[in-house]
Image (cartoon, rainbow, N blue to C red):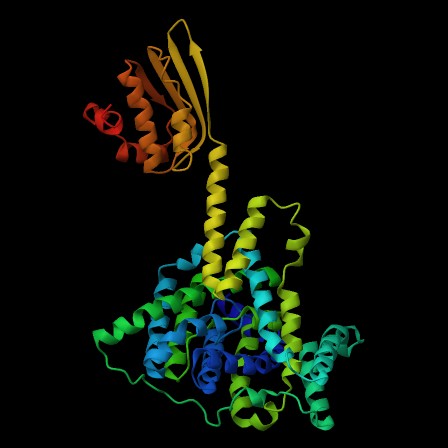
Length: 497
């Protein structure tokens, strides 16, 4: 079974995986260079990292067909470290980042993705689509008309080529776009910006490189905050991307294995002179849209990236940036969830606010972690508020036995605890009070304290209080934290009144 699964992951889609890997490798080059520039390091640091991370994650990652490499989100976290302490400390921080991510995998933190609601995932996708598009604008400002014409032609090839009979389905249109635009630009002698203008490509293979930093507590104190931030941002973006690729391919992935895989890949990158990276949603979508599904596509993308920049740099440097801009605009359009705009009226207001909050914060800070954090926070607040509204108490009085019966429905927790207390009538107290909890659940200490308050208030008024129907889970937390059976606690719970 394991052999069959491994064979399917690597060799179940060879032709499409290889072609998709070629497209991704070409699109990775300018991005890796750009992210290196953002981080303030030599372009080869980003290129070596992208090669190393893609190759390693193809083998040990939990999501086949997903592309990981140097990313902008990670580069933004590194800027201050590189500026203040230099490249060697960045390499050390990259190694520690990998260790943190491996620990996260063993602690099964990948399961935390279940707390990320669909509204946050949608907002994350939309924000990333907008950021990808905005990142292309510098290539489209203060340029000649040739650039606009080539970008438009590239988009035309990408969207129209698939309609050509037979060959249209055989080759990925983004690859055809890059090849066609490059050939035309070379033969026409167009004076437009190329990949070579982004920065000098490396001319040697990466070598093993242990960071040249002192192994002291002072070094650890310097790199620890950056490594922790890199680990969180990297895992967050990787797990979100894995969820999106799961949806696109209608398959499941092992999130905890992905955490460990990202850690191993970053340790490998740090030892080969590369910066920390994570999954790339844009490149992953290029891969999926180009037919890539297996681990082979990710491996080919990484291996081919290194071969091209080291041995074919003369050719690669001539690729017009306009062709790659066309590919990234296609990614931006394909990434954006257009249904989220069409469904703004039909979706609940809470869904729309969580989604838009994620988008706005991500775009404002250029930090996906902040956007997702705000989105999850908003979604949690709305959920807690919604659940608290479903908590209510039915009251009935038996005059013969002078008994007041309260039947509690719903979830009692921090947000509904005060509402729970307010549902009881302490002004007209019967001799006997029966509180039926068959249809209720107590979740936290705040809920238990509210129950204590109700019971003790009734007892202070002279009522005989009986609790019935407490389920096993609620009984456990009430027994542990409840004090209503301890008379000495009455003053404490009721505030000394």
